View (spheres, rainbow, N blue to C red):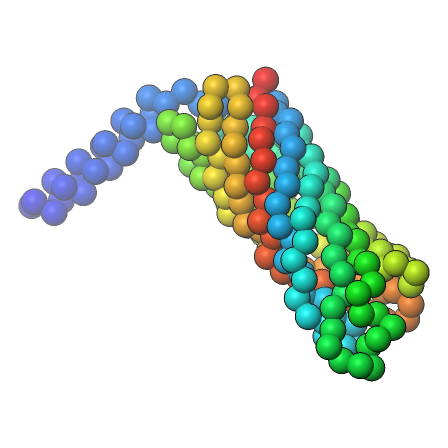
Length: 186
């Protein structure tokens, strides 16, 4: 009896706290930066993991706990290896761009919006003086946004994995990216 009462009380409290919240919805735009942490391989050749600064922008539409967001971001990496056979690639600049759409499903609390995100878009990779190519792929992640009036401060972790064909080799990219930034809600 006590467990049932406690369970019902917690459910009622949860409902009352979330039902009374003003739903933040509408259009927003924002900027982001963060850390891109990619593990790069080309065929059987594996390069050392390299972390790099990323930056970009987004615009989205949010209604209650759902959001759809268009994003663009860019990261610049260096191909790193201690293998003397890879001297041609060692230190060479590698850049990638993401242009896509992400969906967010969250739980809007009073000032915090924790969410899960999944997206699909075009990843363009360019390796300096070797070539460039584009592929489409998925990404998944989780994050939270803190509301301060019309400004939202967000942070999220996102896993990306994509591959492109450059100079006859299949280049695979994958890693966990950290994104943070500001959104302005209209």
